[in-house]
Image (cartoon, rainbow, N blue to C red; front, side):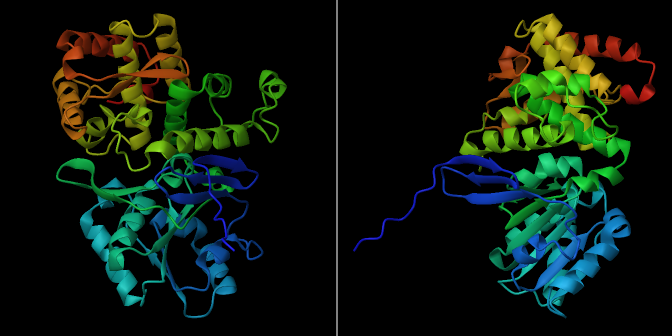
Length: 408
């Protein structure tokens, strides 16, 4: 008798506990939402470790806030002497090959074998470092992400990219290495600073602008989401969404949108990617500032500039462009930076993106709320158009009374 193997259709499937992704090229992985992940009675993390040797890596802030609970959980749920916890340096400056080598050295010292697991507990920096180290250690071992930041839960935690900054370029070196498990606990968000929340909102706004007008409207009506309580907007409830609260709606919708966009092009064989909105000018803004500007902040400035550029080029109505700028400001995000948003540097950013994307620009610009298009050729953006877009943002930033919204 021939046994028929089940075939899983490509796509993203959501359920009460999270999302499962099945890419057309064969990669499958799971992203879980859970409550109180380090409670001894919560079996999820322990089940993901599956009686294997575990080396956990955390940053200093996560260790201060959650280190004792993490150690207590591992002690209660895993075999004695099968786990250890290492505290890494924090911050974007630590995203280097030297840090990756140190992670591999810690793993070797702890006796991590080919069946072992690296556990990253933290935000994007920690997960990028540990994921890249796991991709290289013994030519690839499993790793688990416990995402503690908003950016981590809606962006880094749902994809497969890992990387470090090198050669003067953000994320120049890296690997595609899907996590064995990616766990997100929304309660972590309650201990984040306002700046960390705003950085996450920048990435959420990105998905709303290019993919989802309803999510955009929710952000307009609830700009301090994850920082104060909001009732679910009645119009959202009438659509059958938001039944578990507006925070849950924003979190899950953002995760689903990102995964659905990543799924058919998981390893970026097609370099025209809508999720690169905010990531053409942004990387140079971030690095040129010496990381004074955080990633989510650079994404917001890029989105403001790209939207103004689309308006100058006649690709989006002025009213929709204004809504985008107003939303970014309402979320507490900068829309301009005097030091880095110069015509020379921004032209350099366009050229660098064009080179990185195979001599095609693939600049993502909105053409409406919840919709976007590509500007493919470098020649389609005259220097005068870029300068005009920058001038408009400079004038707008000068009107803002809060200096945090016009980064100096």
